[in-house]
Length: 347
Image (cartoon, one colour):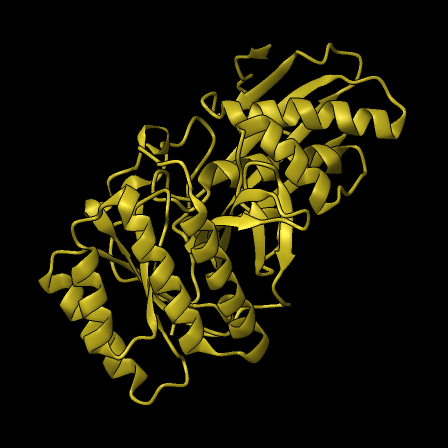
C-alpha cells in the first residue's frame, strides 16, 4: 500500500538515497498508427523534445521495512509511487537484496493537462531515483517497461531527446530516426485557453488501413527530414499529423493557427495530440527570423490564442518566456515541494 507521507526532509539518517530526473516534451511532431518490424499495427508517436521543465525525484530506501511501506510527497502522485514500487522490486532483485519500503519525494514544474508528458516525467524520475538508491543505472528499455506498467502508456522521455518513433502503449522503440532533429525555433501557445484535456474521454475511432498508410507515409518523410536536416519537410510532417489529429481533438483555433504560421513564414505547426499545447515552427536560419517571430506573437494575441514560451531545440541561447499560460496550469505543490519557474532556451 502507499502510506501517507512523513513530514520530514528526505535523505536523512545516512539511509541509502537516490536522485532521478526526467524532462518533459512539447507535444508531438508525429502520432498515428504504424507497422512494427513484424508488420503488426502499433500506435506510435514522435515527440518534440524541450529543455527546461522536468520532474526531480529523491528516494530514501529503508532496509528492513515491508515493500508496501512506501510514502510519496505530494500524496497525489500515485502513478509515480506505483512506478517506485515496481522499480524497488526490479532493483532489489538485481542487487540480490530483499525489497523494502521507502520515501519518494517529487518536485517539478511540468504543466499538467497540456500534453507535455507530466505524469511520465514523474514516473521516470521516480524509477531513476530508486535505481540510484540501489547504485544501479537502468537501461532505457527497462525504464520504459516499468513506466508502461505504472501508467498503461508513456512518452519516450527515457530516450534523452533522441528522435524515436515510440509505441507508447507497449513501451518500445519502433525506429530510431537519427541522433537529433533538425534545429527549430518554436513559438509555443495553448489552444482551448490552455484547459486540460481528459484523454480518457476522447472518442478515438478504430484505425483503418488508410490510417496505417498515412502513418507510414509521414514516417518515411520524417525519416528523410531527420537524415537530411530538412526543416521544411519536418514542418510539413508535423502539420499533416496535427491536421489528422483534429479529427479527434477538434480545436476550434487550429485553422487560425495554421493561417498565422503561413503568414509568418513558419515551416509548420505541431500540437500535443493528447493535450492543448501547440507550437508554430520556424527555421532558425530563415532571414528576418526575429521579425517573423514577433509577427507570429502579435497574430496569436489578435486571435486570443495565449502564447506561452518561445524556445529553440538548441540549448545554447538566452531564455525568455512570452506568457502565463503554462504557469497558470502548474500542478499544485504539496508540502515541501516548491515549484520554481521553468527556464527554457529561446531566441
